Length: 266
Ligand SMILES: NC(=O)c1ccc[n+]([C@@H]2O[C@H](COP(=O)([O-])OP(=O)(O)OC[C@H]3O[C@@H](n4cnc5c(N)ncnc54)[C@H](O)[C@@H]3O)[C@@H](O)[C@H]2O)c1
Image (cartoon, rainbow, N blue to C red; front, side, top):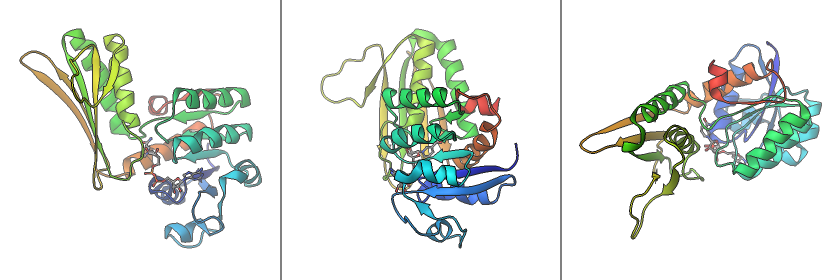
């Protein structure tokens, strides 16, 4: 569908500001509203350095009213889990479709969003990683886990910039869920310290430093050999393109359903 009106929550953040730039450059999408904790009351274009856009940064406590007034079709949310857990159900109740990029949602927070999407008959995409390459990476991880089976230990190493708030990354957790599905229920053990004999587990390791955009390595380690699958993000643009693609896609999907990026990519 063309002509979708898209709002951003987390509009002034690393991801939000890049997504706004992409929306401005995408035919058929219009920036309808912007929300953040910072720069409230300022023109969002001036706040993110692209010049006046005529869209003011609103406080997310006014989310529902501003979304209705701005006739928003889709809300894209890249913030923090505690904010998304409140804002996503409020947007769904206002009849707005959702693209959620925020990571670190608990099972309970996610269930609250899934409920709100079903009850209010909107459509949503929730993905821990909007990169197309990571979609392929997840497929390769699934295939390796399926083919290798139980004789191999699995360790996941992820690395991100020093401003990332949650650990392990949502992408690492998705990779672990895929391995666990294919290898039959493995517990995640984050880091190891002291006495910790290896059991039926997936070892999870998080590195934080500098400006690393996002690296993920899944290691399948057997006796005498190992396979390592690795994805490295060179730029946030890979997430931006996928999130904007999902926003265009979600407006014409069957309502009441939470999709993931593999649905968007077909
Ligand atoms: N799914 C993906 O592909 C993907 C890719 C990159 C980042 N992320 C995730 O997106 C989220 C944001 O990442 P970032 O690097 O842009 O972070 P960031 O800290 O640069 O930006 C977050 C923005 O959200 C705003 N914010 C926080 N609470 C808010 C609230 N209650 N209401 C409105 N705005 C609020 C902050 O002020 C900030 O501007 C993180 O959870 C990160 O892990 C996901």
